[in-house]
Length: 267
Image 1: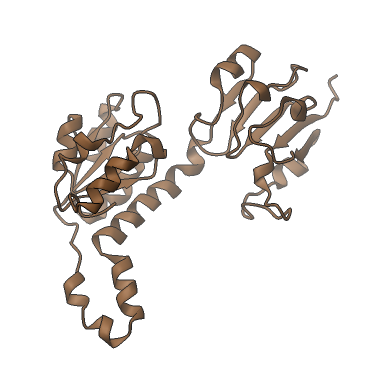
Image 2: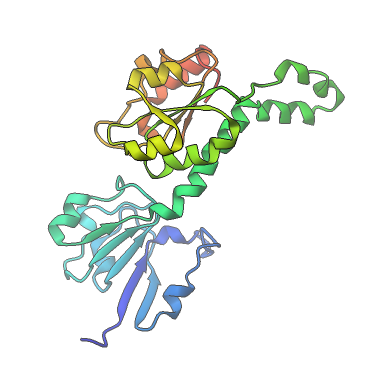
């Protein structure tokens, strides 16, 4: 048994229908070259089927779901490793009952997602999409540029719903913009908040004060639709909302209504 091969499965969505990699930059060489390790791609099934995993020790899971029917009967599967963060695609109770460890990769997404938040903030406040459209219209569009100047960030208030792994990184990257920082997070590390110059505020106060409000919290029963009609109504008409967390944290119908009514500047 000491010389047994450790078999690693990758969910089928790591490959496109034509067999090419979904993420070409995802380096599989450490797995391919590791002594005693064998890797294989699963057929694309969502959720995964338990019979697919009978002879595997570990699963690297992209976006496909892993539920109670995905647990193999052999008892061999020891760990499910999410390629990303969040457990909402995995039946945690089923894993616990089967003795399967569940892990995520927070360091892999912290900087890229935080950079995305900054990118969206700059695009929204600078009206990038509008300016792109004007540019493509030639001289007639360019003549209207003064009507779409956007807003500066110095002295504005950047708020975050959550200052965990990603939320804190957003504030680190945003330091050069000379903005005021506020956040709401019932599990916040006060030392991290102090080091980053973040004022911890109440939930409603966050919505009232933020000029740019970023959502960086996990999806749980408590955070489902935490961004709802009532809280969106608290936001400034000049404010922007950015959600790089799970979609159901925001009540999409309420947000659509607010945007159509021009109650906030954008999202």
